[in-house]
Every structure is written in C-alpha cells, then in structure tokens.
Image (cartoon, rainbow, N blue to C red):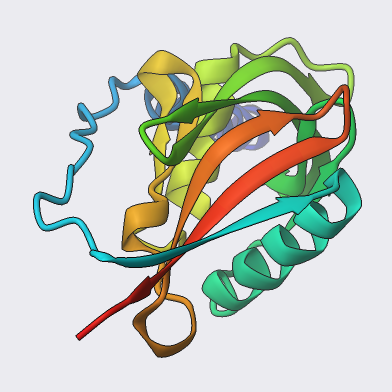
Length: 193
C-alpha cells in the first residue's frame, strides 16, 4: 500500500513539473521582447510614367487578397483579409492543441506611398491577450513576405509597397485611403528605360 502511494506521489510530481514547465515556456513566448523592426527605405525610387487609379474598398480588397494569398501560400497558418470601414485580418492560433479564432482590426494610414496598418482592436475568443502579444504570435506563426513587416511593439503592420513587384517591374504607391468614403487612390509607376 505504501509503495503504491509513493508511485502515485512520484507520478503526480512528474506531471505537475511537466505542466509547470509548459506554462513557463508559453509565458516566456508570450511575454518575451520582440526585436526592433527597421523599415527599409528604398533610395532608388522607380522613375517612370505614373498612372493614377481610383478604386473602391471592394476592388481594393480583391487586389489585396490576391497578393496576400500568393505571398503566404507556404505558410502553415491561413490569414484572411476583409476591407470595410477598417481592415480586418482573421486567422487561427493553436494553443495547447486548441484552435482559437482571432480577428485584428486596423486603421490604414498612408505613409510615403506605403501603408501602415495601425491596430485598433483584437478579438481572441473570450481571452484577454494584449494586442502586441497577438501580433508577435502572428509574426512568429505566419510566413509573411519581406514587404509585410509586423511590428508588435508599435502594434502595427507596415506594408512596404515599394518592395512589392507587380507585372513587368511596375510599382505601386498608395496616395489616399479613405475607407469611410469608399475612396482609395493608388499610383502605378510604369518604369521607363
């Protein structure tokens, strides 16, 4: 009887140790500092003819979905995008084998021809996790291309359009994004020899 009790105590302490180590590792991943993100400013701006394009949120959403889907094709976690009064990103986080849906809300800000998505809200089921932590988890889980820069410290995503290649070396610049009025103005730069 005493030997059985010792085996049960040993099993309990081993299990408790494993649970404690798991919690410590998860806490470390959640709260570990993120590295500073340096935004690269391309010195050699593409010169050429400029084509101004005015589009709607629905058309902009379709274009953004196309490029985002192609860019994260090999990523283990899927990210969906929706454009309405704000820009919304949807994904799933897997914690302890449980899939938790997340939604992140962003306000787009035009920044020297690029787009800075400033996080305004995060929804993670009924969990209360800081937005910077969610962005860090997304950054660590999704294989974003070099032109999408996640900055958890500033709670934003920087879309560096100057690094995005579109057909035949053409480039795109954002000029104005006004989602409430359904007005988006972009410039397509067609390089001249």
